[in-house]
Image (cartoon, rainbow, N blue to C red):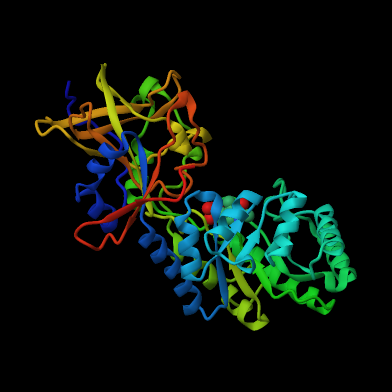
Length: 456
Ligand SMILES: *Cc1c(COP(=O)(O)O)cnc(C)c1O
């Protein structure tokens, strides 16, 4: 039954000509037919554009910088290939990720290894391949130095990861005392290590704390140089925000939404939602960061970096994948409930990972109707998975569709490449993992497609 248009919260994504060209090409319907289940599509041209924008922001500020793609944000091989071609490195944290990254064309010296308490096999391989290793703890530093002394390798390249004073409960990094000890051990290790600088990764998306800590680490580089170490890099980790929607839509959404707008009267703590709009996002966030004056300093971060000859390293995951992919499900069943419908699609919410963080992926999915007679009006509907779990919902929110959803129609969740696609996917219920389809050259009349190298 149609419900008269109420104040249904919506969250439209920012316009994206590349994704829209794919959606209107007829390709999605063909792929859905061919693959016979849910799938992800990837837009590598958009990844290239995002990478170029970051490099331009560095160039404009006159700052020497290196971008490393944080691989954990998406498992597809195509991002590694594009990183290699676009002059980016890759941030990895396991032997599997290292193997994938080398195998898809990124040289060892362009890899940064992060993550805590790295296993000995990872340390050994990373050293052998000349990768840069972000050391997370003193015992790891000792293990690394031992790896060099006992292996057939000349030396290890390393950064020292700092426990952010603003996030003292983080389980990553070393405090001031530990850093001082680490510097001392690096000096004593002599030629076994090249101590290249410091790193951090902050939760959240605020700019000022990143500028502040980066400024302090530039200073620490100068102190380390006085000890005879190289110390010419600072890594600011990831955390460049992505804006999925415009400011007005995001504010309106937060204002309007209440439990009546969700299936089973579910409530979400709005503080658990990803900030779907940020005033500074992607390359814009980097530009702002470089122009920000770290607290206690008389000049911008860019100026500090230039004056001290420090190279800025960054490890963006989500920001490089902004708009670089989407996820397609087919509606298998439609059930009427009081005032709304419950759609069941042919996959699970494991392919839309936000559900697993006490939260919900909010950007409005597109409905691609396969039924020409679909009735217009406002048709609120929540979206459930093809599993036997009450809580396995792709969208608890009653999305106000403007045509009546029917079995066979397709639902396209936009902008899912950053973290939504594969970090939680599993073959639950023996449902196949959705394949990843790479769509090349979306500027042509007919987009061309191929499968990514692997389906995990
Ligand atoms: C997760 C992670 C990143 C990537 O973070 P984004 O928010 O996706 O940019 C970068 N560096 C480290 C150390 C990380 O753990």
